[in-house]
Image (tube, rainbow, N blue to C red):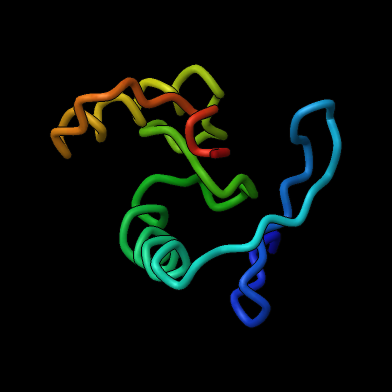
Length: 90
């Protein structure tokens, strides 16, 4: 419910400094997010979980786990530079 595909915006509720923010999404991001919501997330999440990103156990993904997953996918994509969640902000 925090993703607005019509406007291309993602509502981040607890960002840096615990501030809420609206983050614009490029079409490629929206396409990837739609694929995740359609294909991967339904297989993972508990029906009551409202978090967008969930762990393999179906619970809200912790920041540490998100960093591990990001590192794994960066390696699979043969990205040689260090990739962190903070990198995504830039």
